[in-house]
Length: 257
Image (tube, rainbow, N blue to C red; front, side, top):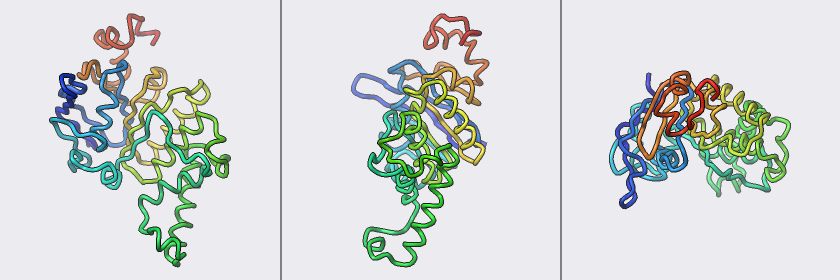
C-alpha cells in the first residue's frame, strides 16, 4: 500500500520550471531515494512535500490526507518529518536535550505550565527524556547522550538530527542529503541507522548524492533531471538505465557504479 502519493507536482519560479509534472508513489515500509544532478529540483520537491513551499499544480497525499496547503508544523503533526542539508541543532544543548526538543512537538505542555512544574508536565518531561534515550540508542548515539551538540563530529551530528526528527513520531521521514560530508565509516553507520529506523516502522524518502549509499539501502529510486522524472525503479534497473547514465552517472560502466 502506498503511504505517499505524489501526483503531477509542478513548481515554477518565473520562467524556470524547477519541478515539472512529477509523479511517484512510496509504499509503506520502504526506503525510496530521489537522485539527480545539482539543479534537478530535488530540494524544491522536498519543500513542496513538507509545506515549506506550495506547488503550482499537483497533489501530495500522505496516508490518504492531502498535504498541499498545510503549514510545515501541521505536516509534522500529520506524521511527516524531515531533515535539511545543513544540520540545524541547538549547539549548547546536549544530544539528549536536542532530541527532547523534537519530543515536545507531541506534548501538551506550554511555557506557563512547564514553568509552574505542574505534576502532569513533570511526567511529560520524564517521558520525553526516556523517549530521547531510546531514539539515541536507535541511531547509535547513546554514548553521546550528555555531550553538547557543538562537540560532536559531523557524522554524529547528522545522526542526531535524524533522532530529533524521529522524536516527532513520524510515519514518513524525508532526509535531505544525510550523507553529505561523511567519511566511509560514518556513511556505513548511517546506512545501519536507516535500516533500524525502517525496521521500527518508519517509511523513508532520501535525497542523496552518495550513489554507494543509495544503491545499498534503497528499495526504489526516483531520478530527476532538470525538474522532470526520467526514471523510476529498483537500484539494479536504475544502474543500467541509459538515460540515467547520461544525465546523472556519466558514461561510466553501470557495473562499476
